[in-house]
Length: 388
Figure (cartoon, one colour):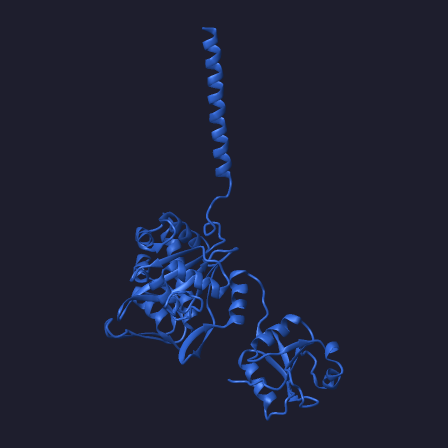
């Protein structure tokens, strides 16, 4: 009997130790920050709004929601932006998502922006209107006049919004975002509408996220669980008004006889650095350039100066170099090397960055013609052509 008692004591002790061990392990696991990155504020989420088109369902708006640092940002991506690296036969990002899948689209967007996409959320057609209706519309400071014309097949009509602090219902709010404006860019209007919606949602969510918003998040196509989508939304609401908005800078180029929209590499990199990573970056407006004609072509320096001013650079002087035999275009850095990089990357052709010491004795002949406060000297060499 005593042996049985001892054995029971040992067994009870082992069981107790096991329970304590399991409890300790559970505590250690729950004490560890195992939240997914988008909940911890470190993730990037591809966000797409589907809409009705003439031939079915297409992408009405595409963006990247970033939750890093102390603020969130929504970076709008033109849905017709060319997806250079896709294996899918589709060309535009919107078509990549609709045809090849949203995970593939996220990879393409990430490659263009230099970001890793952690997830995607695709809101169904009509979701934007339903979300706006769920908060009873929004209040927006409309600047300029906004005119929206319904596309053919979607109901005829025109809606005009005049400037002023206005309460917009769902129809008016979408017209504000989609229409043409005399006072604001589309990215600015989308950003203001997003902020207004989140502000209204934060009030509506004082007793919990409204059911209509929960239902919309549940209907969305995503590789996140419904609970994770809800976490993302609640985190966005908590960050109001610290939600920034901007659009990827692009231009249209003709390749193989086909017009395609492409991202501007330097401008996009700077936008990501400032908006997403929170870094202070230099802009063309921070760079003052003296432009010299070094190839002898008529108006080479003048056209170079106009090209740079169109892109925001400050020009301190436009004149001829000491000679016209420059085979290469030279960028002479006088202050900050980063400013020389910005100038070089903005040029339509190749250029070599150098210093006054490395460029001597030629720079000695230019020195007296360089105004005080100039950051960079540009000597336009042979082969550099400036389009507007």
